[in-house]
Each structure stands twice: as C-alpha cells, then as structure tokens.
Length: 420
Image (cartoon, helix red, strand yellow):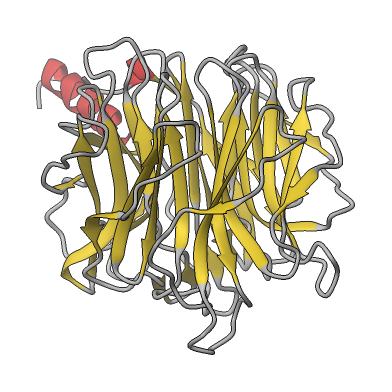
C-alpha cells in the first residue's frame, strides 16, 4: 500500500474507532439499590453540572473535566427514583422517594434544593398522601420562571395483588420547591398496584413557554396523554391514547432490568421547530427479541400525532433499550441516550447517543461508551440512563456493572463533535 493511501486508511480507521472520553462519576457498593442516575446542567452556568443517584451526588464546575463528591442527606431517608433539574437562574432541585418503611413519610416524594451550584442542599420538603405509596416523580421547570410542576404515581398499596388496589397519576405545582399545591389525580384509567406492566407509571410532564402543561405516562399497554391550559387547574375530560406497547413494559434481560416508561419533550427554543412536542419510548414492534427506540411528534400541542419513527438505525436482531431524552432549549436540538446490543450476541452492552438537528424528524447516532460491559446475573443491575443538554453541551449518564460492582458513568459531548 502506498504511504499516502496508508495514511488515509489509518486516519479513517482512527476516526471510526474514536470514542468520547468516559468518566466514572459514582460507584455504589450496594447493588440492591436501584441506582438510576440523573443529571442536570446549570442553565445559568453550563460549566456547572450535577449528577446524582438516590444517595450520592457528583458535581463539576469546569464543564465535566473534574468531579467533586457531594454529601446528600435528608431526614426523610430518600433511597430511590432520583431526578435532578435546574431553573433558568441556576437553582438545582433534586427529587427522590423516601423509604422509611412504616413511618409517616413512607414512599413519599421528597424535594431538595440547592442555591449554591450543588454544593449544599436543603433537608427537603415532601408531598403525597401519607396513607398511600407515592413514587417515580418527574419534575419540569417553567422555561422563564422558577415555577415547578411535578407528576408521579400514587399506589393505594404498592405490591398488593388486590383487584381493588389502584395506581394513579398525580400532579402538583410549586413556586419554589418548598410549598406545594394539593395533589390532584389527572389519570382517568387506573392501573393495578403490582408496579409492573399493568400499573400506571412513568408520568413525564413538560411545559411550554406559555405555561401550558402536558403529561404522558403508561398504563397497561397504552401511553396516555393529558394537558392543562390553565396552570394545572383543569385537565382533559378524557385522556388521549397516543401510542401503545407491543411487548412487555417490565423489560428484563439476564443480569439487567429496568422500567420501560415514556419521555415527553417540548421545544421552547427560538428555532424553526419551536412548539414541537416529542414522545420517546422503547417498544418491541417486531418481536420480543428486538427492542427499538421510537418517537412520535406533535406540532399542534397534542391534537394530532404523526406516525411512530424508529430512532436506532441498525438492521440487526438486537435490543436497544432504556432511553432518556433531552432538548437543548437554546437551539432545539434533540438528544436520546440508550443501551445498545447490536454488536453482540452474548448480552454485552454499549451506550449510544441519537441526535436530531431538525426537531426530531431525522436522527443520526453514535456509540459513546468506550467499552462495552457484560451484565452479571449474580449481581443484577438496574440499568438506567439520564441526559441533559444546554448551550451546545450534551451530558449523558448511564449505569454499568464490572466484576459485580455497579457504577455511574458519563461523558462530555460538544455539538460540533457530532457528525452533521
């Protein structure tokens, strides 16, 4: 081979194998905990990033180059369902569920606040009916105000097989994260209390810059949609079914398990796709051994939804699963992170990022994990992803297991590093 041809061959080989630098952010000794990761970029200072699990935080003040462990404590004994978010002024909120079994706060939703870029946190405020189980909360912050909106699942008694036991989707709002409105039920179709396919779960709210609120969630094998145009005071008389599941919602593989729930996004940017609403979920439309990532879009606030579109571009008979999505509200770019097994037939798993620069109409994808991991059946992993994006900075996070030890990883991605 001629020297010049060899140079270009090696260059192309390097470019095809080049990876984003991965960083281990949090390591968890007790794999019995669901260590679902969450991440938020400070919307006032994008160099400030916070990553969390139920009882661990890591903080960066230099755009993800270095990380500082942060102590996170609450008298409400938080231990599951973590979610981080940031207001446009840079206030962080951390939501999780308490688990002081038998206590007055058992399985309540807890909200902690940080006003110093994630260094210190309040003890927390909590909400929910104390006689029932409240969990899996998801918040959204108004684009131009510090107002918070929260949706979650309320179980009459989590785990009960009784046909009279119900799970429902709840909603509340707060001007500051300390005082919350009286929770209201927004779902018309109740699920059971087993916490699996037939339960109401995965409530994901989003809000437009005009204050109109939208929520999507799963019950049985349907994805429901509701909305409020008066700040959460009234909702649709009948929830809309906007998509369905062909396979199981309680997805699991040897050594891996996770909750299959939808994500709802709204583009509030000043870009040409402003006002686009996007639903992201995983489904087994082809067969149970071939899970894919899907999206549908609405351009008229949920009155009409387009046809489902497959996000992952592979043609293999493999699983892509556990997606999490974000919109960069400074430009409207859409990003989806997920696990991917397209390169293997022995359950080895990579992490991919799909991205769209045209409002979710078309997606490209790239592998972002430097190394795959092999799930350990003797130490099952609750696999989950998280992602945030702001000012052309994308930060996805995910869990993995190595030699029986679970950990949270992440990588810094700049938009100009992605192929247009």
